[in-house]
Length: 497
Image (cartoon, rainbow, N blue to C red; front, side, top):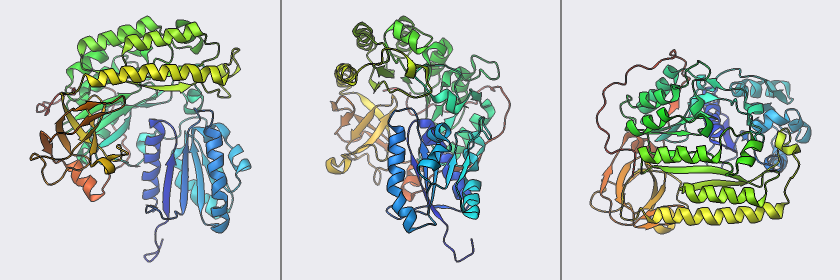
């Protein structure tokens, strides 16, 4: 690019889980290192990247439908480049350019670091470039990342999964679990905090099995404790653990480390032990509920969320009732509920007993009704409670109408609040920290309409106000092992409501 040329612009459209969101941050970091710039809102970009998901049945239709809508744009502007990556690209491979020959680049989950090179090669050769590797080429953490948020960031502790759940296609697309060294993880967290980030979420396909690759089954609890020594890091979350690998030392670390939040996402999937066996989920409902009891004994204020699949092949009414019974006993603060989706390449796709859509829908509706009632009851209990909020951006769809802002409590609940009162210091911004009192509990959120009790301006808020987002270089340092956490000041408040 010459001095007078404008940089090529890009947009990344992300589908799927937190892993894909974090991968998109890595893609953005590489593109910016290669001279690209984010496209302005509403402007037509020079490059569109799709980071895809393959978990849901309609993922294919959604992608190919979107690609079809882009064909006229490509005809009108042959210099426009279109790239497809992620799990669906890993699964469909060359099929994508067969069905959408106007796509320029296809890359998989194991070679996200190849995107800039593949784009350049496609421009030079004037033909599509498809590169799908069977194993990890470069650990994602070694790649630069342009973070989406000024105040909260994802940090991968591992990639891949060693489980064999019969409904899940992820292990075949993401590969076996690969663990990062603790020193690398902590160095990345420190780099983010140095950029003003207040909250990190430790991310893994099966996050609490972290350490399996280097032979330390207690490594995840140690990692949680080690984050307590990082000065300036106010909140630590993690997702998603597997009940079969969940150990008491992790609960102790959550309870005893001040900046680890009292929030736990624990996927149930089914309350039926028979269905759990068919799913190859190596725990049973009694074990699951025992973990929740232990968590609540150590952290009575913990908010526990879950994932549940309705309509797994062969699920009977008795099986489904077992799920309802566990949900009623577990008292989840919220649940991500899914209707079973057949995915080619998974064992469950060929199982007998695939249920009719109307049966699955009726059961799904009953589950949602029950969980909504529980969520509402649990949220009503919080009325009158003081909460500390990390002010968020874009989480309240009606904030403009209600003149509220939104933030996350330390237990992960979404709170819409009024940014007013004598405590406000020159205006509340995303990334600032406020305290307020809950005035209303709805099924999916809380409301706090009184004056703020306190308002703390932060560097993250400064960055958000200036439109700045952290950019981190790849982190590759450290060996297995955790030092004693350094002394740190007492946090403003504990990680609980």
